[in-house]
Image (cartoon, rainbow, N blue to C red; front, side, top):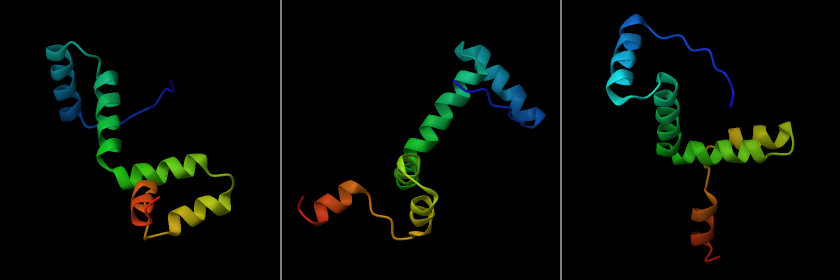
Length: 82
């Protein structure tokens, strides 16, 4: 795991503390769950992020980021009956 410093406003912190107490979860656990859900919800961005993490060099990363017409592997396979 990695440690992350996070700055939030007082109201949000107090709400998080209350929910943390009610759900018997740490605020860290709630943030991890929320971040995972956010990433999963944005599947196109998640797929691009996965490609960036697998990229071999900076040129490939820049190419992935510059491609506005991103097509997922599944879309590509179904389009070409692969």
